[in-house]
Length: 479
Image (cartoon, rainbow, N blue to C red; front, side):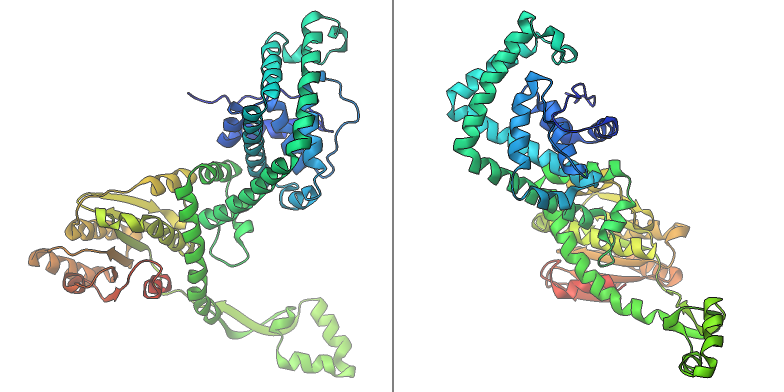
């Protein structure tokens, strides 16, 4: 059943304003995670609680309103007080304050844990269960828009709901006193999981450059960020892929570092005022007292002489074609291989190179990522895809040739990965090697196995590896 993306209960026990409510409404419409925990809510006022938890994490100075106008929100106020009085709460806010993504992910995790804690408490406490059922039954008779109107307090249904909520709140306060440690432990777990989700998100769609993951992530539309975050929160396989992607991206950074340092050269003299590029002669003028004022004037005007630096052209840095064997025997390496692909994507994104992934067995599936960019839907599809079946080298290599025939994939680097062997006809092998010379591309094969005679017949280099975490496989990150 499709979840509703509409927020109906805007009531709050915090100092929320119109901006807070409008922003949370927008985020709720984007996040499947928020919609899911609302459906799983253990309290009749879970929707209002979601907004308050988010505001407590996002706002600069959240505080609980001293007066509670709506008696139906007493249980929410009790929970928010317990949450915000926790000595670690301000530490949590260092992670979430004014951060739409972090605050939303953490809200999902916190309310998820609160729902579980309440479900456990109801299972162990029959009185709490009865009082909660009584409030739920009465809540249906009192529309939200009328429940906080003071003139209606004398009305039977409203007064009855207020009385039932008082009893529920008393029981909840007692439960928090007797089982408060478990509640706070659940909150700690939620924050740890939220931080892990964001780190994983950076690994999946962030950049390859060290220290720039957050900056790269901010370039991705928030709706995309939340979509991937929801998948990470709900799918252990996605988390495992993200862990491998993070591991392989670190290796890729190291492999690319030397190339980056050597790419900056001094190629002449120009004028400017960048201190680190000033000619030694200019520095000598600065150290001479009689010439210092003239130097400072020219420096301020941007007329001092400095080295001109140009980035060396990345010759041979063409598109990447990654042929990945997905026969049944590769199933155990599936999450590793997906992490490896995402690390290659981070290189392609940094270097603005197209990457084509050819998944093959006895069938073939093609995915093209222009300039290394990947969407949340593409990440989900990649994670879910595993072809199974046998191994057909010819099908894969023919697919690679078709991709390279595309004008945007000329001078490509082909990476071929397989744990098996297959027969290739002499006629096709001749055709493939002729095309390789004609189109000027090279093939690097990572062979997970011992018998590589066939791979060597179409490859420029063959490396034997045990899995994708084998150091010899990291040669792929140098292309």
